Image (cartoon, rainbow, N blue to C red; front, side):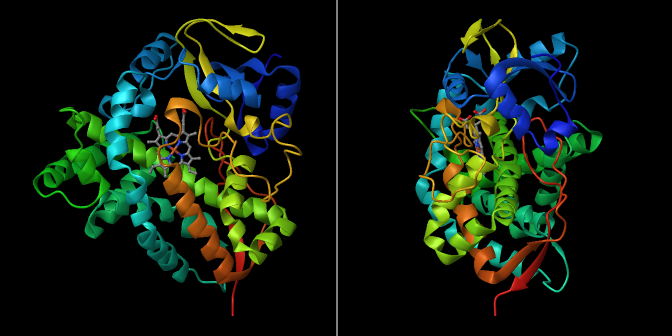
Length: 396
Ligand code: HEM
């Protein structure tokens, strides 16, 4: 199939195109909104196989060289690129092991009271007598404040940390982005010194002091890791919360069912992840040698977009895939990826989402859309609403 452009129109509703591609051209050439030629993989089984294939690589330096050769250079600060999501084994294995020592299940569970406090204080500030944009009032500030808690960023620095991070997450490759990333790098460099001198109980200190058989993270790797936590853990979680609320609003029977039994929350969160996957259009790889996916041979040095959002709507894997059904069994979806790069923050994202949906549904008896026509961000990666204006009726 020719002439597929992943543009702003596609971003408003990608699902009809995904369905057609899965049927007619499950591995196809396409062009991104910025004009980069890519291969797009849309079926569940192909996506899962591709994500586990070591010939589909991630190494940032090789990818950058390839993009530059095609006249499409990236301007991201080099020092922030050396993180595990941009590396292949053996570098990836080493980084993931060191970071895994700091990002433990115990550390995530220990954040529960902080997340509950952060969620409650954001909801306390909402004025239910007027319309509320759930994204700016709640879904956006929640995960970044949680990341501050995870990293032990002192309260006094939250505002500047949040502002750098907001700029980085929302404006890629602009001058503001460069200024914010330089500000963040300076700040984090000072914090690394401080955490080295007086380690706290936070994950940043654990990363600074993590050791594995005499190995440790270099300063550049530490900076890149914290940067990765910001970019990987922020907008994704914003979209999980907002897309989940939007999905429930579109399926009132499911909203009623969940309100009636909050024990279904873990299932519901998995179904939100499947139904409106935050990392939706695709996650990127490139071919380090020719690779056959399905019936198509992709040459070496090509960019491959593995569509998680499409795989998660594949009727061969999920019966009645366009129906939100919070009673579906847990798991199996690709929203957190698959294989060696499987999301390291998945337990944290699940915990945040469960707290967020529980709080929203117990605080507000009615949640209603102000406007049926909402705008989706034009992103090659994420699926997220620009705004989610709601009318909220507090529980009495
Ligand atoms: C990797 C999704 C939240 C940290 C990934 C990948 C996906 C993903 C799809 C794999 C990308 C690939 O294979 O190319 C999500 C979603 C989230 C979420 C949908 C929320 C709903 C978080 C949070 C954190 C986090 C809260 C940490 C604070 C990471 C890290 C990696 C990763 C460090 C890289 C792992 C590796 O390269 O080995 N995430 N993520 N994520 N995620 Fe998440």
